[in-house]
Length: 194
Image 1 (cartoon, rainbow, N blue to C red):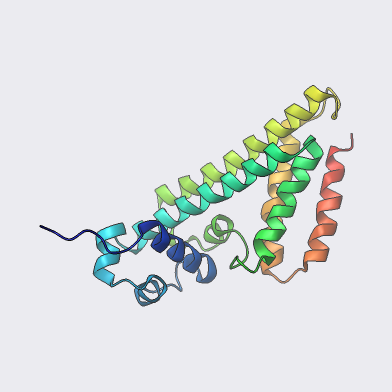
Image 2 (image 1 turned 180 degrees about the horizontal axis):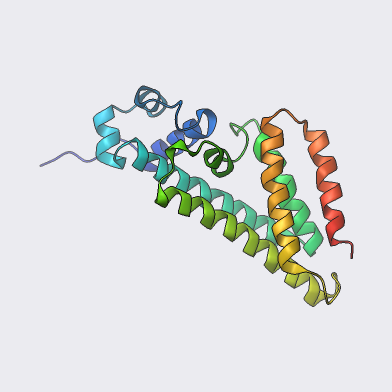
């Protein structure tokens, strides 16, 4: 009888995700992945496939975790503006949290385009589209409640907010302080003051 796996796949995938997030795809070697997970190369290959397949699974896990976090923020917000503020502040927290390697794995991986094939590009595009749809839903809800004016430009504003969030990731990685990014959040929220 064959022995079962002696490790937790999700725990190993989280370690892989954090490593790709911290170092980037190109700078992460199979030896790095072995050290991060405590697994041999053959165990990694048997469980997840090659480095590219491993990255896709790590990216998928990251997208799932971030979308769950964003959904909780939206559900707990009392107003549309509070929901947008919460999402933008979460971008800052994602970078500066001691539990995070910093930045956003999706944005950073798009900037390091060498690892992308059609599948990973589609995954990244899907996350950006989901983020924009979430913002559009928030703004539509704000219109329904009367918080935002009836002719509020939902689609364009949601796109601008999503672009601001991605831009904040890049600026944080370039060394912008949390305080400066918080100023950007306050300025960006003025888009909702129509």
